[in-house]
Length: 201
Image (cartoon, rainbow, N blue to C red):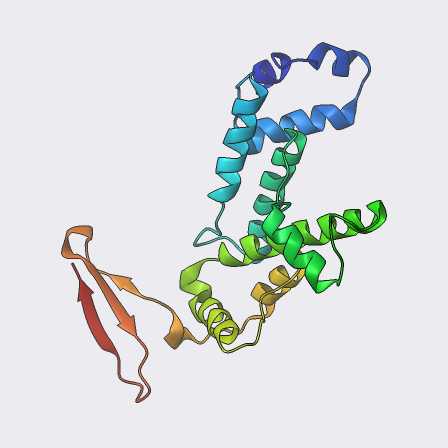
């Protein structure tokens, strides 16, 4: 990693000025993006790809997942990119706040953009949760929305706390058995507590 760090643009300047903050940012870029690309747009594209593919690992705790998620967001920001400020999200948030994003004051625009980013990151973090552990939580949230009740978390912190506090019923976990060539055997919970086995080829 030292050789990669010394090869980045600006390393000599950061080192000479003892700019610890910039050096730490470069280290994070290497650790969580593994990016040796010099062209900035290429690096930014790679950062977005890694963020979009970010999901909670089967054995990762909510805290470990949050740390990984945050690191990928930081890499995009450091590469000069933005997350969660799509026009659709901004318009939705502005409407909920009773404001017109195009006509409102600059101070309000900053608040709208910050809220839009947080809302988008919250849903990305929530949907990236391990489906084996949180399948019922995710499905119930989607079903509640279809019924007119939006229970999606609106902040990353709220989504993280939701995963931490969720009480899982072992009967609701998706169990996978069999070899790869044998297909997937799903054991689904039934009302009468009997399990029905479905083989998907």
